[in-house]
Image (cartoon, rainbow, N blue to C red; front, top):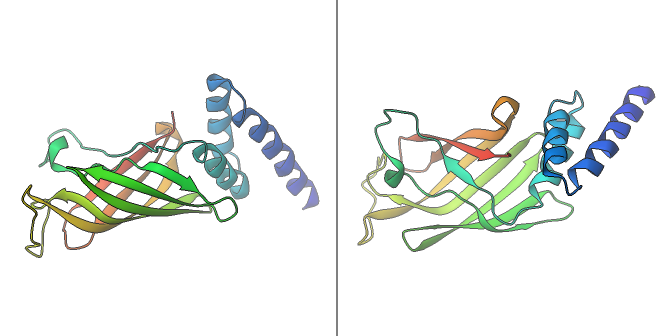
Length: 177
């Protein structure tokens, strides 16, 4: 048992050194290797260390070919002004869409990132189930949630976003590469 833990500690120290290096190629190789590591603690630490380098996280809605709606019909989910908590592995951020801002809170738990959007602005027609009142611009704010998990093959964290008072579930991706 101690041998396995020591091995994970050694691997994590090596990954950490490379993830903090100036070489983009080396960082991406270390990221892929660490996310495939058998130790869940190493994978969780990797996600936290990699993401906390950024103050903008390009989370985006992924539209499949032939989707019933297009890019102008989905909310803008890019996270800006990201502020990370040092010890809690949590963050706070903002979104902007059609001149409206929304608040975002998130937390890394194990290998997952739980993200909650407060007042995420989107077109009012997008899967509405409640006849919510739209602003003059035809948009409405909704609270949404998504849990992102690693997809090593796509070099991304992926999940499905669900929003209050809407029937639509939106696939989202945070590219790591």
